[in-house]
Length: 174
Ligand SMILES: [Zn+2]
Image 1: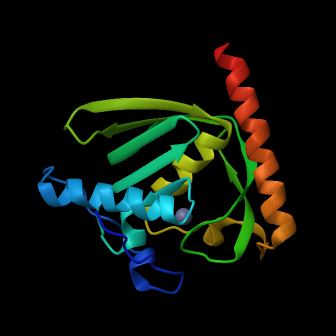
Image 2: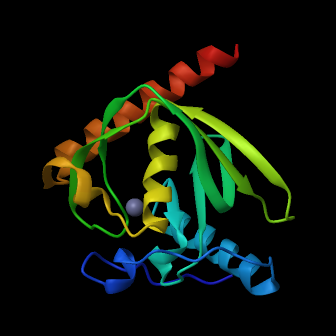
């Protein structure tokens, strides 16, 4: 595994449409592993292949106990709406409010080549939509309102929101 450089806003590759993965090769598996390592090192909750310079339709989402490797993901159902404050490893130092579905169902292929679907609500739905947008060359700053510096106060507020989300998730499964 290796850390990969995270491309930053202004890099042309982040505005391009990624191409479908035709075959799960050892290089694709290595890329998934590197994306995970890079995401963890940067303390992100998701990362998409274009962010590490690869125009492949691949993304990873990890939050709390949930972890998904998504190859050729597609949103197959969406409902409701929510406005979340988002940030991005490729947009260092900024956050902004984005209107997204409250609940989404995503169909994807896993590293073994098996197709699966994941239905997510609240914060996880936002993360999935955000990562899938990267595959179409869309950054949150392209669609956000109230884009502002991600300062210490905002970082703390984000942590609190996630804690609340984690608690509500725990309740649901009890
Ligand atoms: Zn992002």
